[in-house]
Image (cartoon, rainbow, N blue to C red; front, side, top):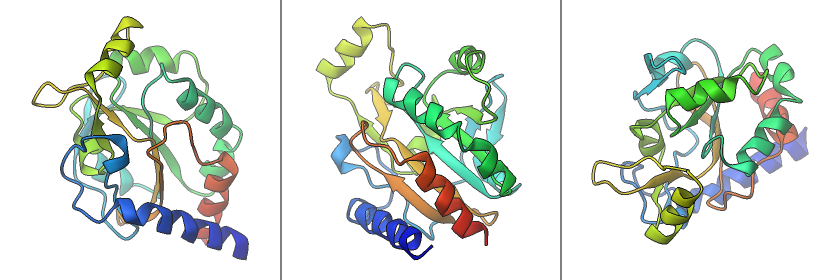
Length: 208
């Protein structure tokens, strides 16, 4: 148990240097994201369910403790690998009293297609307007070369109000029913994700 708490603290400290500024602007690059810190409150932003219905993220987190997963999209193999691993502990997390929300800039239509490929109980949410991604401090602008490379593979990235392509730095937040962040893991390197075991163990500690 002590090792779990130390690891959770280490992750929070690791993220802290990236999080000194208010998370209101889209970062110029992934390494400049400024995610929410532990103790901060989930922003009252609107996202969409897979059927296109708008919903308040803050209202969702008031229902029960929540694990919020931010991911790039169903086209991302690293995200799919993370989902596959998370599925092995999903029921354990739910049994602890949590709900799991997965937020991406994917359209509701794409989320519906992805739902057909998985039996997970995760609630997938669309953030094409980048409301949650921006206010959680995870959004960053994608350079034109990378954007063109994605477009060549039929991957059309969400754009901000200035027409610039944006992606989220993948992140995991555990939030209590007061809307306060109790744990966060954000890494600008999209290839690095927290293990499902880490997420489960931290959820166990926070549930007590």
